[in-house]
Amino acid sequence: MKCPLCGFEYNEEEAIKACVGCPMSKGKCKLQRCPNCGYETPIEPNLIKFIKKLGRKVKNED
Ligand SMILES: [Zn+2]
Image 1 (tube, rainbow, N blue to C red):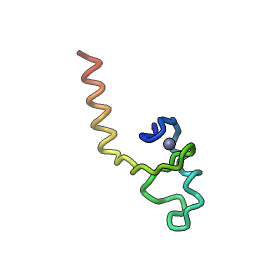
Image 2 (cartoon, rainbow, N blue to C red):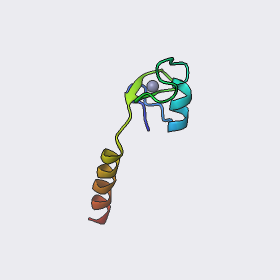
Image 3 (cartoon, rainbow, N blue to C red):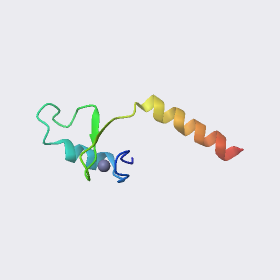
């Protein structure tokens, strides 16, 4: 995933590590935190990821 604020690219593991300091979440809040700038973005539901993948597949087949 890519941070919409600073453009830093990070994976889910890094986002969880960056969020460990949050007392509310215990690593399970519904936000991903950019390890670079600390900006939090909502985690994409799997359904949206799936739809995006489908969209990409259709484009590639064109
Ligand atoms: Zn960032």
